[in-house]
Image (tube, rainbow, N blue to C red; front, side, top):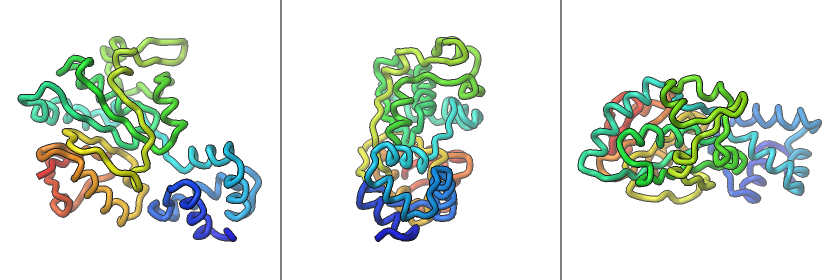
Length: 257
């Protein structure tokens, strides 16, 4: 019988394969408690009994437990380093790059990558993999329609070149959309593809336990080619990159050695 948070996370793992014990407990409990109280439940037991038998409630739960906060060119100075320093090295002597946007949320990040790479390569040569746990977020990413606030850091010339305005909303043009392939993936449980030149995983690792991060750093390293780069968020600096086979190339950029 599910009667507390521990039993709740065991039930969720059995039903969905998602291991909530690998997320920081205080943050996850706070988020989910707010959700079930808003719905009128008084315990994890009562909430679990509903979501385990109702697909709509389960979908809402999965959407709430994932963190979908994103925007184009988020933390613009880091993207400038990627464009002017990291990409030229990675592209040296190559006709394309194998790129993965992990935990891509609603798509702003992989589309930013496509826009940036279009300065170096024809879009027809790009096939950026973008993955996320949240199926609803991926559907929104595939629709590629965003409010103006998501474009607050987009340079004016990029906005004009790669978006069309639809009233208060902006739609990513097809040439950019076609350069990205979206797939559902559980980072903590699923296997990773290999031989990436660049992996971008920003602003999600902070929600995981130290044990889970240790596991993921090793998996990301194994998925990169030697010399490939792992790009993390502005609160996710790796303080001991050598432990995972990385060396720091710039702030928040780690090269596989």
